[in-house]
Image (cartoon, rainbow over all chains, first blue to last red; front, side, top):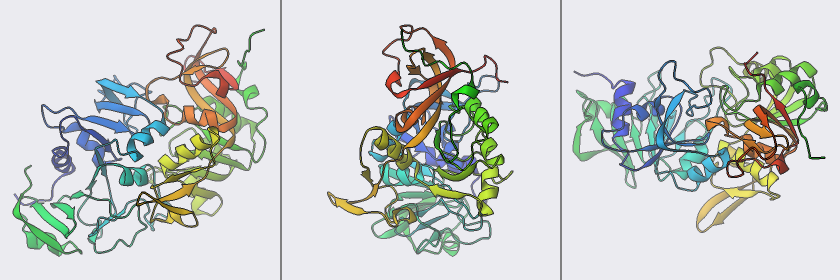
Amino acid sequence: MKAPLKPEAMAKRIAQEFPDGSFVNLGIGLPTLASSFVPEGRTVLFQSENGILGYGSLAAEGEEDPELVNPSGQFVTLLPSASFFNQAEAFVMIRGGHVDIGVLGALQVSEEGDLANWFIPERGVGRIGGAMDVAVGVKRLIIAMTHTAKDGKPKIVKKCTYPLTARKVVDMIVTDLAVIEVTEGGLLLKEVAPGFTAEEIQAVTEAKLRLSQNLKEIEV
Amino acid sequence: MPINKVFPNFEEAVADVHDGATIMFGGFIGKPGSPTYLIRALRDKGARNLTTVSNRCGGGMDLDMLFEARQVRKAIAAAPVPVSRQPLSPFEKQYLAGEIELEMVPQGTLVERMRAAGAGLGGFYTPAGVGTLIAEGKEKKTIDGKEYILELPLKADFAFIRAHKADKMGNLTYRRSQRSFNPIMAIAAKVTIAEVDEIVEVGELDPEAIVTPTIYVDRIVKRPRREE
């Protein structure tokens, strides 16, 4: 069936990128969903800016601990290997390159891997949060976002028009329509949502896409 | 006579907070780590023209009280507003109306600026914000081929923090994700006031478990057993 990926399917696709034994920081919103889809048999330690390494799935209703939340403010559980630390140390991990993978949302990503995700001019006020630190600090940065804005405008662009979060930091983009890798030679379209063609993806992408030789459909 | 930093109530603990003070507020988002009762006492006291330093400027949080009461002139924060605009926070309304000043700081830079102040450092070079609006007007430096910007220390007159247990001398422990900004704010303010669940005798806390040693803490106040 031809349909854009739902958030859960995107989260599931993103979670496949987390190797066994990896340390992963998830941004607010859709990225956080990925914590529920770690492939069976893999141990992934999620790191949180507020000072947790190894938070688990969302807490069941009635079992929430009022002092235990993920970066989105949701009540979570703990893995047996979890640890706590202060905010400065959380950013030692993030900025210091100790976190393997970061997943963030975005307003725009450029063909060079520039990221814009903190300021929506229409709102008049932005929110940087930990995004600038995560973007420059993690070993590998994955962006999770819808392929186009609500008004249909492409979010994968030649040059970001919104204020930047960081330059040349994005490694991979997972949208509701495609999986794209940012390479030295530009953007490489690797996977498309079921039923979509590469031409249809290019039509809603401002930046030029090269096609992977192994172009395939996203497994959902 | 052993040192006793216990204050009998929140009102007395914040009695000397003056107009124009810069205050750090612990917490991250929502309730965990937030000094709820100290914020209420400050609202009741009514000090004005405050500069707040916090991760967020309210939005379904205790800090909303101070913005609602129009006690804040300037806010320094990493994620000043929540993701959702529904409902609009008191801070966002006042900011959009041009009634309040905002200094936005990347979260890792915000906490490290506090740490630098508390650690007696003159600042630090960070890669966060390079090539963005945050870098404007700041000294740039290339170290080992990587670009950095200079960020300066951030100190405060007061830190309002939340901890789990204190002994009467002010040694503090925390519970779970309550910790966040609290231990770092404690080192960066002239006067650190801690709101805690429980106060025990000196010697009852395991020295291995103390996260914030007494040297950083000036006043401690016990929260009511059940939230009021």
